[in-house]
Length: 311
Ligand SMILES: Nc1ncnc2c1ncn2[C@@H]1O[C@H](COP(=O)(O)OP(=O)(O)OP(=O)(O)O)[C@@H](O)[C@H]1O
Ligand SMILES: [Mg+2]
Image (cartoon, rainbow, N blue to C red; front, side, top):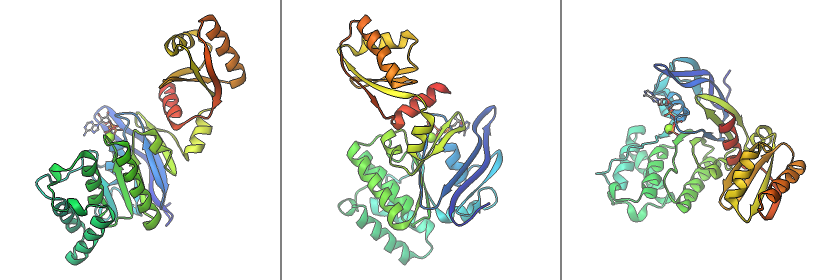
């Protein structure tokens, strides 16, 4: 059942490529105005899902709607309400910044005067002023990405699909891009469907879905995903020899999991109090000095790693 509050909905959505099941039995429900983060390892089925939702790839079975339109029967109507920035977005490298925006605005908007107004507004709000007449081929990676985003939103879509919009750009540019996304969500109520491999970006979404080999294995707010999926607890360890500690803990069979984060170890245990005792014992045997051992809250990255291992 679709209602006005729902932006994106799928039921048993499935896509096969020969023997490969790229997306399996996917049920999604994304509310209007929501920022939805779609996570999963390489080849999990994220881009395939987006392509079906945009009406450019036919599902093998199942159904779905975007902006109230059926993804199988009404792909043309869907194109009128969405923006799509693909993983290998298509900027015209021999066109300038302004010409690229002109092209995309005219594809979507019949009224040329309106197209020009929207494009001027985007040039202003996204800070393209000084680059207006520059060939897009000469922009840096981060600015190319920003221009691709501008092209995807120049017609002011209700729903925006962004496939790894921040891949390969520096942390500051990534933050700027996210500020722009937040502003679109806040001021225009645009629904955002975003894939990313950056876990700190996942933390900023209203809801996240985690897909593994085509199957949705978790879907909820970041806080709920953390508290419901990570039923185990986490210890953070700083010590005199991180590699010896890692070896000892992983071979001991006495902890659920252990991962290296910079100069710290995150140790997954059923219970932090007993777990800490076990770790102290093991470190003493291995003659590793403990600088810090404390319980910590799981991050999305911990959950991601834990889900990947479990599956
Ligand atoms: N056109 C195609 N023909 C055959 N197989 C395909 C096609 N497109 C995708 N696949 C396969 O479907 C699966 C899912 O691919 P998809 O591109 O959706 O993954 P993804 O989650 O977007 O990965 P990444 O994080 O690397 O972008 C993979 O096994 C991929 O090889
Ligand atoms: Mg992809």
